[in-house]
Image: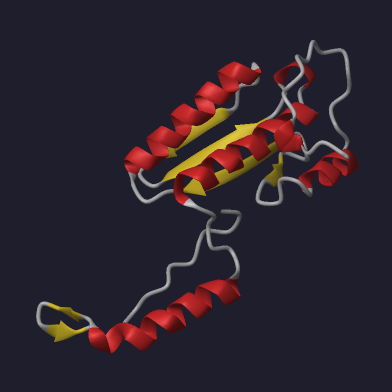
Length: 157
């Protein structure tokens, strides 16, 4: 049985090897589909969404601990409700399998924290329709709820 990237651990990269080609990166991308190739396939990046600042901070701390354990350190920026993780292997100035290992393991940490994000437009529409069907039963300030807004994620989120 083939080991998935999420089951692997990072192997120290000492340099002296070429970075992944675009084709090689795209093959590994199948196991990290929510990550985006960036900088002409020299980096992958993903923005994770959370309900508040504390969840973002906790996720960043978990990814930081994972990075220390794996010896492979991403660039991370975060704020209220989001954390953006960017991965590349500095010693080879491009992508390595380690970047995809960290990507899949970071994604697992996010899902464990808040559950999978709703990514399908059909699923979002279904949830919106369900919410609309129960709206007459809810009130705000003694007024019936008459509108629901579905917030679309940013592209690449």
